[in-house]
Amino acid sequence: MNTVSPEIAIEAKGLVKKFKDFRAVDGLDLTIERGMIYGFLGPNGCGKTTAIRMLTGLLTPTEGSVEVLGMSVPKDAEALKYKIGYMTQTFSLYGDLTVLENLNFMSTIYGITGKEQSDRIKEVMKRYDLADLKDRFSGRMSGGQRQRLALAAAVLHQPELLFLDEPTSAVDPESRRLFWEQLFDLVSDGTSIIVTTHFMDEAERCHKLAILEAGQKRADGTPKELMASMGANVVEIEGPNLREIRRKLDGKENIMAAAQIGARLRVLVHDDVADAEAYLKAAPETDGATLIEQVRPNLEDVFVTATGKGRQ
Image: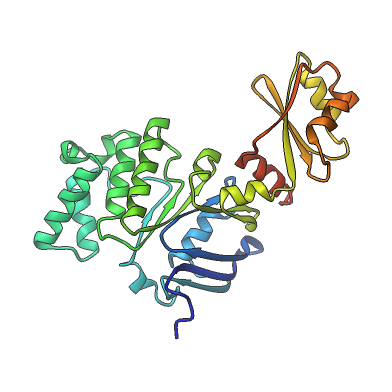
């Protein structure tokens, strides 16, 4: 009997995946609502892809339970595949087939035939600007073009839930921006999306996200919630001797991190300090600074405060 609310797309409890003695995913709990873009943010090797593969039914968990769209995974994986789409990190379509041949092949796999097949392929080719490329071999396409083709193939069968594993890692900034606009169009049409990324600006576009490290979830929530609860205030410093200031601040009480960003030093001050800006202005370590001001936090700040507990 299904115990998951119809508003919940994914419910995972105590999810573990071990490869011999290595725990690639280690006790992951997730509750992901429908109708949103939910992100997994973390460095390479943190367990993002392994988690995605368990959620899609491609990998069997070592421990824990998963329900996706009300179905138990991996038990119901065969039935689930018609309700989900999966765009892998590396281009997985056939390089020696044309755009049209790839889409015909993928639609057949999903049981789309006849007029429905023709209509659906025309629709996705128009939507993802592939009509003029229909006779192009996919192996000869640019990164942005292959990305659009992969997305078109993943949504041919109009899935309720779409999984995207590092979908923009090999494309230029303009293609990334367009791709995200296309994702929000899909959400507007009723699709729920799970996306993995190591780009901070992309993660900030998600409705909600989880920060992963060493197979564990370090934090989750909306970007705004994560920034509000990270336990630090952010102060930026300008001056001629930033490297020296950074060296002196390293290890100082109440200083969680300091890193140079262009012509400024970005310092995370523990929120136990009532006035972070005044604290640094009064600190002898900042002698010589020409500007010290508190600024808005971002997701990179959240990531720095949430991680660092992984394996050495």
